[in-house]
Length: 248
Image (tube, rainbow, N blue to C red; front, side):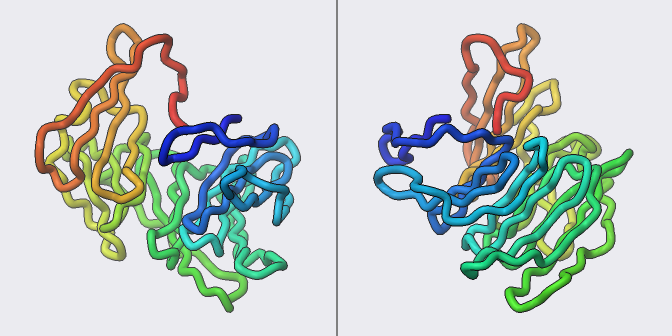
């Protein structure tokens, strides 16, 4: 694996990670999931030795999400459970365990106040959340909330005002506003043309959104636009062979 500095894309030293997933926290930490989940503190010289270790799935099939403030970590062990850990103390503690064999996406609010995750067995997509309390234990998720306005296979991503997803019913990108989860169309249907997107990405600052679709010749096409709908979408094609899962 290669690590690149964002300001100049220069490579920095990196260990040989055996990993299934990785996540950056806003405090500069890098979490890497393999058979064990490790946290590395990033500096000018790259990641040092792990500063934290939590047991993952023995087969290495662990997905993770890190809260922006670096104090919370969510682990989904393949076809098993979702675990929520508080890692803001020297000794990490597990604060929630949820059966989540059909989990699709997971993440945290930008203010690190809530964990959200989606799951599906059949239509529709379901959403659950857990309010994060540093002093709480055995935290419980909300009941499953059906999201009939969201395309069953749409990625769900975090934006400042809520969660962003694709709606096939509305034929648009929609914002699921925090708390109410009402689907508000964003007027960005032009982002993907005739085929529903394979991937959806929101910029770190929350101001732009991009989709990845596959052209008839199997080349990947990326279209990006301002999240508020201002301006025309920017588009480009990725040259070379297109992998089945192009984005982490």
